[in-house]
Image 1 (cartoon, rainbow, N blue to C red):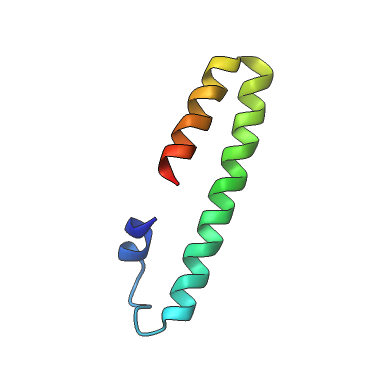
Image 2: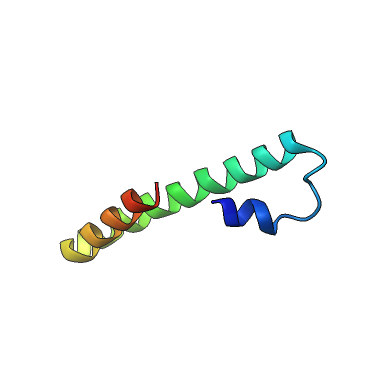
Length: 59
């Protein structure tokens, strides 16, 4: 997620705002990933397992 922090517009002078934006993005991304994982597990377990392992590697 450091890439996101680098891509943010000049919020660097407001680190708390930057932290909140990154945190909000991470939580939404995690929620979307979990929903996608559930959807894929309902339709094919192998793909869901790959998604889980990719998410674990990213953390």
